[in-house]
Length: 238
Length: 149
Image (cartoon, rainbow over all chains, first blue to last red; front, side):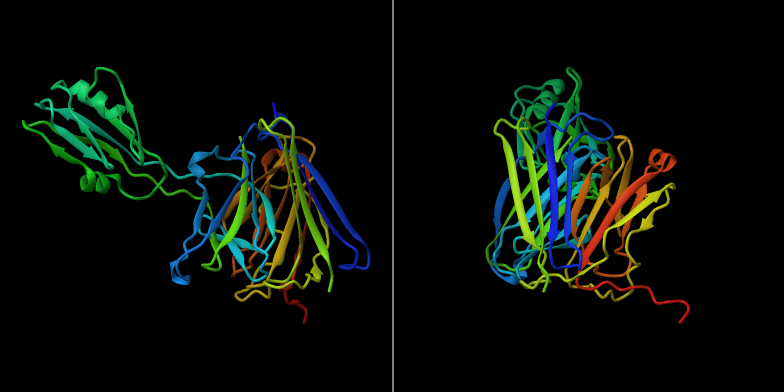
């Protein structure tokens, strides 16, 4: 178990007629317990820029689906700019939280509420031959033989950029799970992207599918200018 | 012009293979300037005994005084029972949970009506009673109009 502490100090001698000197220290523990959090993304540093103001894009810092929902996660973000007018706008889902101007930092909890991930099942059936291909998500499987279970195993063994797979040995079905939550229809993606090329009458039909729902709390930041700005960020999480 | 400084230190000797010792400090300035913020709600301390979600600051009108200006929010859960937490929400979007002793420090855009910052104690926290401290440093915050005027 790791011991991680965060201390905030807020001070001013002239904001009020009384001196302001606030200091709070929190030990970062898992939700509802005394066990220290043990995982972190590490401190990252990245420069954003775009070709023009019109080309500015938001940066997705943390996808909720990658972390424990309702955990005692903590997000740190800092704008390292030294130009006072430059800022990053911080959003959670579509909601604007606030702006980090030059030198500003924030430290907040994050519940990482994700949506659900799309899922579909492909069934390998009918007559296949060695050399037949099935392409999906930019990845091509070339059948080593005609056995449908072997072909399913081959499909499962490949690495897909946007999907993970589940396969039970000797069966002819592969379950695809989206890597990220999304409300898009996976059937549209598969129909558009799945390409079957078989010498016989082999099939790779979708035998079941469920639409996902979009994440509700991805954290994104959007720079105010297209010229170079740099941010630092770290997530400490369960 | 006031000078208010917010500093954060995150340390751990055993979270990662190298010792973690992060320090960050910034002056609280008006949006896009180097002029210090000069207004604050002051530190509030409340004792809550219901799970009802509450607005920590005056409800934002259609055109908030702080819109497009800078505001900073500090919230601290003063509970000592580690299972007692409060849920922080902005405009119906949950930001996260503050467990016993946890704090947050974040900017607040006050962009529009309904972008209020809300807090709701957990069931166990409300049953036992929970103390929360919070404050806002800002350059504009619309106060409610008196009903007696």
